[in-house]
Image (cartoon, rainbow, N blue to C red; front, side, top):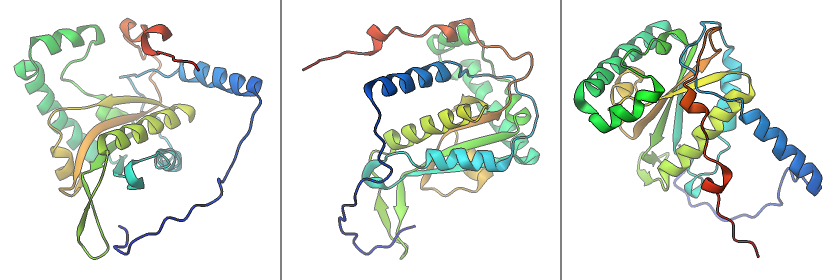
Length: 231
Protein backbone atom coordinates (compact mmCIF):
# COMPACT_ATOMS: atom_id res chain seq x y z
CA UNK A 1 0.00 0.00 0.00
CA UNK A 2 1.43 3.37 -0.99
CA UNK A 3 0.54 6.96 -0.29
CA UNK A 4 -1.74 8.84 -2.66
CA UNK A 5 0.52 11.88 -2.45
CA UNK A 6 2.30 12.41 -5.79
CA UNK A 7 5.88 11.20 -5.97
CA UNK A 8 8.42 13.43 -7.66
CA UNK A 9 11.08 12.15 -10.04
CA UNK A 10 14.37 12.07 -8.14
CA UNK A 11 17.34 10.69 -10.09
CA UNK A 12 19.95 8.96 -7.94
CA UNK A 13 23.48 7.86 -8.83
CA UNK A 14 23.50 4.26 -10.04
CA UNK A 15 24.10 2.08 -6.95
CA UNK A 16 26.01 -1.18 -6.91
CA UNK A 17 27.83 -0.45 -10.16
CA UNK A 18 29.76 -3.44 -11.49
CA UNK A 19 32.34 -3.42 -14.25
CA UNK A 20 33.99 -6.45 -15.87
CA UNK A 21 36.35 -6.99 -18.74
CA UNK A 22 35.02 -8.62 -21.90
CA UNK A 23 36.69 -11.88 -20.87
CA UNK A 24 35.21 -11.72 -17.38
CA UNK A 25 31.73 -11.07 -18.81
CA UNK A 26 31.98 -14.07 -21.12
CA UNK A 27 33.26 -16.27 -18.30
CA UNK A 28 30.37 -15.24 -16.07
CA UNK A 29 27.84 -15.73 -18.87
CA UNK A 30 29.23 -19.20 -19.63
CA UNK A 31 29.12 -20.18 -15.96
CA UNK A 32 25.52 -19.03 -15.63
CA UNK A 33 24.49 -20.95 -18.74
CA UNK A 34 26.09 -24.14 -17.45
CA UNK A 35 24.34 -23.75 -14.11
CA UNK A 36 20.90 -22.97 -15.53
CA UNK A 37 21.20 -25.93 -17.89
CA UNK A 38 21.03 -28.15 -14.81
CA UNK A 39 17.57 -26.81 -13.94
CA UNK A 40 14.86 -29.36 -14.62
CA UNK A 41 11.16 -29.48 -13.87
CA UNK A 42 10.43 -32.49 -11.67
CA UNK A 43 7.21 -34.07 -10.46
CA UNK A 44 8.67 -36.41 -7.85
CA UNK A 45 9.74 -34.68 -4.64
CA UNK A 46 10.92 -35.83 -1.24
CA UNK A 47 9.31 -34.45 1.91
CA UNK A 48 12.71 -33.26 3.17
CA UNK A 49 12.09 -29.91 4.89
CA UNK A 50 13.36 -26.65 3.45
CA UNK A 51 14.01 -23.74 5.80
CA UNK A 52 11.52 -20.93 5.54
CA UNK A 53 14.39 -18.44 5.36
CA UNK A 54 15.56 -19.97 2.06
CA UNK A 55 12.09 -19.47 0.58
CA UNK A 56 11.92 -15.92 1.90
CA UNK A 57 15.32 -15.04 0.43
CA UNK A 58 14.32 -16.38 -2.98
CA UNK A 59 11.08 -14.40 -2.89
CA UNK A 60 13.11 -11.31 -2.00
CA UNK A 61 15.12 -11.95 -5.15
CA UNK A 62 11.91 -12.24 -7.17
CA UNK A 63 10.76 -8.94 -5.70
CA UNK A 64 13.71 -7.14 -7.32
CA UNK A 65 12.19 -7.70 -10.77
CA UNK A 66 11.42 -4.71 -12.99
CA UNK A 67 7.74 -3.87 -13.35
CA UNK A 68 5.43 -1.45 -15.11
CA UNK A 69 5.70 1.96 -13.40
CA UNK A 70 7.50 0.10 -10.58
CA UNK A 71 4.10 -0.93 -9.19
CA UNK A 72 5.35 -4.45 -8.41
CA UNK A 73 1.94 -6.07 -9.08
CA UNK A 74 2.61 -9.43 -7.48
CA UNK A 75 1.99 -11.31 -4.27
CA UNK A 76 3.56 -14.62 -3.30
CA UNK A 77 1.94 -17.02 -0.84
CA UNK A 78 4.28 -19.69 0.57
CA UNK A 79 2.59 -22.74 2.08
CA UNK A 80 4.11 -25.54 4.14
CA UNK A 81 0.91 -26.33 6.06
CA UNK A 82 -0.08 -29.94 5.37
CA UNK A 83 -3.76 -29.06 5.73
CA UNK A 84 -3.62 -26.24 3.19
CA UNK A 85 -1.52 -28.29 0.77
CA UNK A 86 -4.11 -31.06 0.95
CA UNK A 87 -6.94 -28.60 0.24
CA UNK A 88 -5.04 -27.17 -2.72
CA UNK A 89 -4.34 -30.64 -4.08
CA UNK A 90 -7.97 -31.71 -3.80
CA UNK A 91 -9.25 -28.56 -5.51
CA UNK A 92 -6.57 -28.68 -8.20
CA UNK A 93 -7.22 -32.33 -8.99
CA UNK A 94 -10.93 -31.64 -9.31
CA UNK A 95 -10.19 -29.03 -11.99
CA UNK A 96 -7.62 -31.29 -13.62
CA UNK A 97 -10.12 -34.15 -13.93
CA UNK A 98 -12.44 -31.83 -15.85
CA UNK A 99 -9.49 -30.82 -18.02
CA UNK A 100 -8.42 -34.37 -18.87
CA UNK A 101 -12.00 -35.62 -19.23
CA UNK A 102 -12.67 -33.38 -22.21
CA UNK A 103 -12.40 -29.79 -21.08
CA UNK A 104 -9.02 -29.32 -22.71
CA UNK A 105 -9.84 -30.60 -26.17
CA UNK A 106 -8.08 -33.34 -28.13
CA UNK A 107 -5.24 -31.18 -29.48
CA UNK A 108 -4.13 -29.99 -26.05
CA UNK A 109 -4.25 -33.48 -24.55
CA UNK A 110 -2.25 -34.77 -27.51
CA UNK A 111 0.38 -32.06 -26.99
CA UNK A 112 0.78 -33.13 -23.37
CA UNK A 113 1.30 -36.83 -24.11
CA UNK A 114 5.14 -36.59 -24.38
CA UNK A 115 5.19 -34.83 -20.99
CA UNK A 116 3.35 -37.70 -19.29
CA UNK A 117 0.99 -35.63 -17.14
CA UNK A 118 -2.42 -36.63 -15.78
CA UNK A 119 -4.99 -35.44 -13.26
CA UNK A 120 -3.15 -36.86 -10.24
CA UNK A 121 -0.99 -34.25 -8.49
CA UNK A 122 0.63 -35.88 -5.42
CA UNK A 123 3.51 -33.40 -5.56
CA UNK A 124 1.13 -30.74 -4.23
CA UNK A 125 1.20 -32.53 -0.87
CA UNK A 126 4.64 -34.12 -0.92
CA UNK A 127 6.76 -31.07 -1.81
CA UNK A 128 7.65 -29.22 1.41
CA UNK A 129 6.58 -25.88 -0.01
CA UNK A 130 4.05 -24.55 -2.46
CA UNK A 131 4.41 -20.96 -3.63
CA UNK A 132 1.30 -19.52 -5.24
CA UNK A 133 1.94 -16.49 -7.42
CA UNK A 134 -0.82 -13.90 -7.65
CA UNK A 135 -1.03 -11.00 -10.10
CA UNK A 136 -2.50 -7.84 -8.64
CA UNK A 137 -4.88 -6.29 -11.17
CA UNK A 138 -5.02 -3.04 -9.25
CA UNK A 139 -3.48 -1.50 -6.17
CA UNK A 140 -4.93 0.42 -3.25
CA UNK A 141 -3.74 3.75 -1.90
CA UNK A 142 -3.47 4.33 1.83
CA UNK A 143 -6.84 6.13 1.70
CA UNK A 144 -8.56 3.07 0.23
CA UNK A 145 -8.93 4.27 -3.37
CA UNK A 146 -7.74 2.14 -6.29
CA UNK A 147 -5.04 2.79 -8.82
CA UNK A 148 -4.29 0.91 -12.04
CA UNK A 149 -1.36 -1.43 -12.55
CA UNK A 150 0.41 -1.57 -15.91
CA UNK A 151 1.99 -4.46 -17.84
CA UNK A 152 0.84 -6.87 -15.15
CA UNK A 153 1.38 -10.18 -17.04
CA UNK A 154 4.81 -9.09 -18.22
CA UNK A 155 5.86 -7.89 -14.76
CA UNK A 156 4.64 -10.98 -12.93
CA UNK A 157 6.20 -13.23 -15.57
CA UNK A 158 9.61 -11.64 -15.06
CA UNK A 159 9.32 -11.92 -11.27
CA UNK A 160 8.28 -15.57 -11.52
CA UNK A 161 11.24 -16.35 -13.76
CA UNK A 162 13.56 -14.76 -11.22
CA UNK A 163 11.93 -16.79 -8.44
CA UNK A 164 12.41 -20.08 -10.29
CA UNK A 165 16.03 -19.17 -11.03
CA UNK A 166 16.70 -18.15 -7.42
CA UNK A 167 15.24 -21.41 -6.12
CA UNK A 168 17.39 -23.38 -8.56
CA UNK A 169 20.46 -21.39 -7.50
CA UNK A 170 19.66 -22.32 -3.89
CA UNK A 171 19.71 -26.01 -4.85
CA UNK A 172 15.96 -26.65 -5.06
CA UNK A 173 13.76 -28.11 -7.77
CA UNK A 174 10.44 -26.69 -8.90
CA UNK A 175 7.33 -27.58 -10.85
CA UNK A 176 5.05 -24.99 -12.42
CA UNK A 177 1.40 -25.99 -12.18
CA UNK A 178 -1.50 -24.06 -13.71
CA UNK A 179 -4.87 -25.74 -13.12
CA UNK A 180 -7.65 -23.92 -14.94
CA UNK A 181 -9.56 -22.18 -13.45
CA UNK A 182 -7.61 -21.30 -10.31
CA UNK A 183 -10.11 -19.11 -8.47
CA UNK A 184 -10.21 -21.71 -5.68
CA UNK A 185 -6.79 -20.43 -4.60
CA UNK A 186 -8.24 -17.05 -3.63
CA UNK A 187 -10.73 -18.79 -1.36
CA UNK A 188 -8.33 -21.27 0.22
CA UNK A 189 -5.60 -18.66 0.77
CA UNK A 190 -7.93 -15.75 1.60
CA UNK A 191 -6.64 -13.47 -1.14
CA UNK A 192 -8.62 -10.44 -2.33
CA UNK A 193 -10.58 -9.98 -5.54
CA UNK A 194 -7.85 -7.74 -6.95
CA UNK A 195 -5.46 -10.69 -7.14
CA UNK A 196 -5.58 -13.26 -9.92
CA UNK A 197 -3.77 -16.57 -9.31
CA UNK A 198 -1.14 -17.18 -11.98
CA UNK A 199 0.42 -20.48 -10.98
CA UNK A 200 1.29 -22.90 -8.22
CA UNK A 201 5.00 -23.54 -7.83
CA UNK A 202 5.91 -26.77 -6.05
CA UNK A 203 9.32 -26.42 -4.39
CA UNK A 204 11.62 -28.93 -2.78
CA UNK A 205 14.28 -31.57 -3.26
CA UNK A 206 13.89 -34.09 -6.09
CA UNK A 207 13.16 -37.67 -5.13
CA UNK A 208 15.97 -40.18 -5.57
CA UNK A 209 13.97 -41.76 -8.40
CA UNK A 210 12.87 -38.46 -9.98
CA UNK A 211 12.63 -38.46 -13.76
CA UNK A 212 12.22 -35.92 -16.52
CA UNK A 213 10.46 -36.53 -19.84
CA UNK A 214 12.92 -37.14 -22.66
CA UNK A 215 11.20 -34.45 -24.70
CA UNK A 216 12.03 -31.88 -22.01
CA UNK A 217 15.70 -32.23 -22.89
CA UNK A 218 15.03 -31.00 -26.43
CA UNK A 219 15.77 -27.27 -26.54
CA UNK A 220 15.59 -25.06 -29.60
CA UNK A 221 19.05 -24.15 -30.95
CA UNK A 222 20.25 -20.57 -30.73
CA UNK A 223 19.55 -19.83 -34.39
CA UNK A 224 15.85 -20.58 -33.80
CA UNK A 225 15.44 -18.33 -30.78
CA UNK A 226 17.73 -15.40 -31.66
CA UNK A 227 17.89 -12.88 -34.49
CA UNK A 228 20.76 -10.37 -34.51
CA UNK A 229 21.14 -7.05 -36.33
CA UNK A 230 24.65 -5.76 -35.66
CA UNK A 231 25.74 -2.21 -36.31
